[in-house]
Image 1 (cartoon, rainbow, N blue to C red):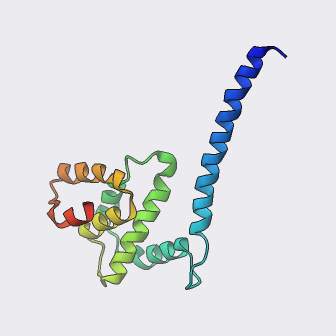
Image 2: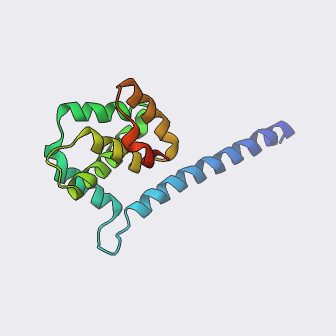
Length: 141
């Protein structure tokens, strides 16, 4: 076998190893989210529960606002991100006995459900929509 084939195979092997390790990591995270906790329900079960519990509270305008916030997420992951954020928003709405989903619930749910690195898009979007950031400063820091 020529030496150049070996030099092609080594990077290919390392790439595939990295590729499978990355995929395995994300699959394992999803597996852990699906594991039941002390109460018998998993994080995904609670997320679906809160979404179903608050489905009637969402107006078309609020759904569009959430769609606007998750727009920078790659298309492949957008629905998953939207469900995760909607689950957190639903949890906040249920805990506060809200009658409808309000803009402040959406912003707080987004902040609590997403990693800090995603908050800069939120801040940019809120400034573009001329929404006051002062009530959310504590959550953003």
